[in-house]
Amino acid sequence: MTLTRLSLALRNFVFVVLQPGTVAGLVPYIIAKDDFRNAFSGTFLLHHYLGILIFLTGLFIMLHCVITFAVDGLGTISPADPTKRLVISGLYKFSRNPMYVGIIMILTGEVVFVRSVYLLIYTIVVFILFHLFVKYKEEPRLKRDFGQDYEMYCQTVRRWM
Image 1 (cartoon, rainbow, N blue to C red):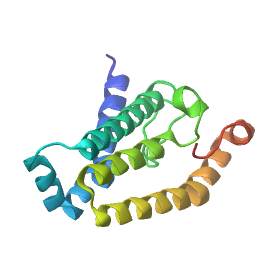
Image 2: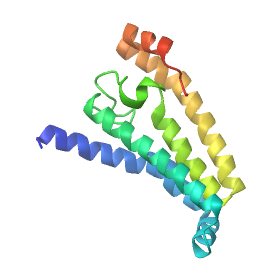
Image 3: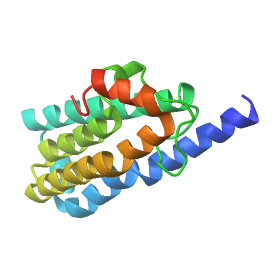
């Protein structure tokens, strides 16, 4: 592995821990700490298994996007260290924002697993914030950075699903 690839892998790891790790890991644990403890202390019921399935699907989507950003885009998931090339392969053929979809699925899996109203409210707020960030910050930057290619991509691929 070259120094450049090693640096990119390390930067992606750091940004995954800092960004999705905080949004979908640390904050939900803080919000629903007791609910998580109670969910793991008893017998697993159907909603536990369903929550795990949704969570793992979201985790797979998120990790797929991280790898796609690194390999195809030569960058990271962070706006502070964006891709050098427009990423339109993999899951990005079906949604312009599968990373955010994956994180919302992780959060939804946690909500289903622990049945926390507070975590549900947090998940809804996070989705609204993602939508506003994508629409008013990220999309204008992508139009500026990638021009006509991004505009054509927007015409053929939906923002969410």
